[in-house]
Image: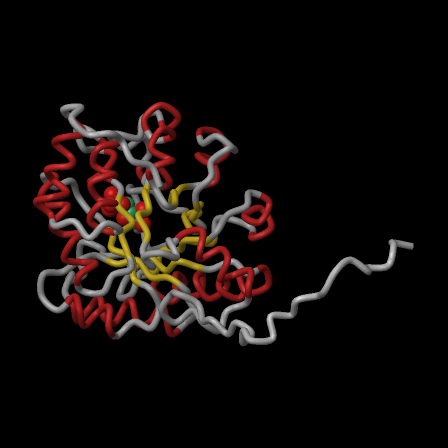
Length: 298
Ligand code: 5RP
């Protein structure tokens, strides 16, 4: 038997109402504690935003330029990212298990670039994701693609599995060569992902109407990077996306194919979390490259 608790006066803070604080992320207030906690490992509670580093490209296109040796080129970027988006093969082989940030795991796959990419299946058992302490599962959704329904079903099955474990699902709106990348299409694809249960949606930035895409999606949208652009252009795109309602970015090639990936991811974070303008963030990038500024980790 423990000893009786007779020490001093108890303080129930009778003058302080019990906390009924909501959750900081759009659309996420009704989730269970575990799912909210996982989301808070991906999105920073202070800003409600994330800088996610995507390097899952090898799952359909092999050793992509910049990803030839993930252990050498990507693992050192881990401390600068809020979350890593990767495959389970790369997590287990190339990322130290001491990694402290979020982990978003690619959970669909199948076809290579030699085939129709929309013919994906679920590529992971949720038990394995839980075993790896993953914080969200990412699944590609090919709205308008040949295997549209199959890819949507991949997502809905993962969403249902995710609710059993408090595991959020990131729906990735794929844009095939034959699909128009405009606000009307992205509004359709992102809204479908959210309506069918995705807790986060990833999509591309478009110059016209992106704010309508984010406004029409009831869960956080993160901006995909796309093909490599000059650094200032990529920072400008990230700036516009967050200014127009994105809850951060999930960028790959524009970071790991930059001449200075560590400097670039810090410049992106300055835009996403620090409110820097593209010009200010680009100046930070130059300073870091030239060794005139100190590196910042989260
Ligand atoms: C598409 C993905 C990739 O992770 C992502 O698009 C790659 O990032 P980037 O386009 O910025 O290089 O989800 O399958």
